[in-house]
Image 1 (cartoon, rainbow, N blue to C red):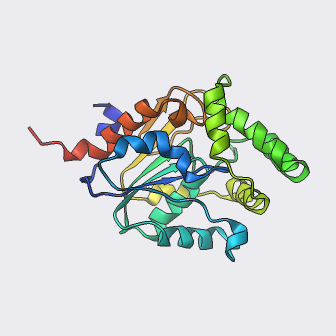
Image 2: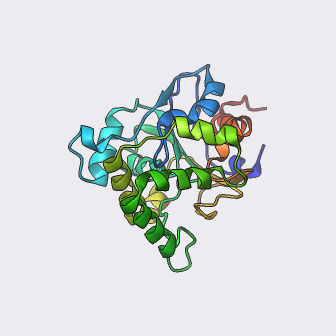
Length: 246
């Protein structure tokens, strides 16, 4: 077993434990299907971030509450990129409800700061400028960043089919991504946490926190390029404490 995984205190995961997959910015939660399909023996839920035009939402906290109402109890949260912010807050606001947390190419803070790696201020301004001038062009640019390294046509097409185009939502969630800092919140969480990072992520530099971290081949969408490897690591993490003790 990977020593980083073994170092984390596990809680028993059964075949009835719900696995809840959350999406990154600009995508549907079903982007996780290549990984989720390998957990066919247990409940799997895909929970999308709310469409801002569909509901009266004006804050990070209100969206977190809406998400919580869509997620079953005792769930394992598996969150990609942006949704990791909401997953961290869910575990903070409802600590008795969630079993464990897996952050995939995610962070409690995406923007770089003093002695903290992240998205640079120049990159932030570039993203926001593209969003205000030509959002479809930004979406295409972002897809290419997710596919890095290289530009695998299969991966690009799969990401396109899972993308969303609702302008108000995209802009709103982009502001949340750049203006949220949950580092202190993450430090206070007491449930098992695993951090997964792409070795060649062109969007978010690899960051170290108090939780175990594993670097996988690929970039920001590593789990789509390598679903088998990702699923194997998730199973090792989730079921480590369920194995019979010798």
